[in-house]
Length: 150
Image 1 (cartoon, one colour):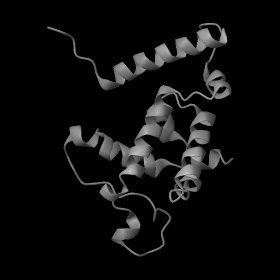
Image 2: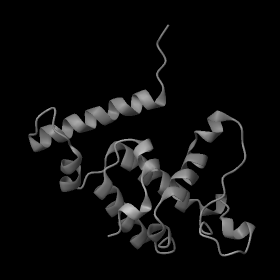
Image 3: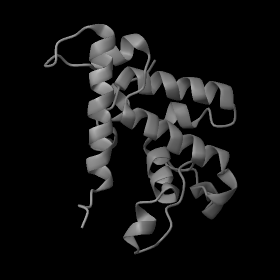
């Protein structure tokens, strides 16, 4: 019987390989951090690429999602955030639909404000992800929007 691996385990393995490749490209030591090398080369980390892909999926399929401003007309802080569906299935909650909503809602407000102009939106999102070079999804979700403003 083959061992089963979690998605997180496989993602970490791919990310470790990505860091090895970056170290080879920049001729850095195995114990040195790659964060600055990712920024300098303008290469997204595995997790930043995942965030970028989820956000683009969400933006390209806007018709599948409901914004908070469609549910009520009050001008609130999270007016442009997307409404999370109510579901108890963990497989659904870990899928691209719900993950895309969570990742999009956690974006800084100045990036979400650019949603109507895809060129500027993608550019600002890439700059944000290059600058931060997230090493895990937890690092992304623990990020505070006040920490960065280009």
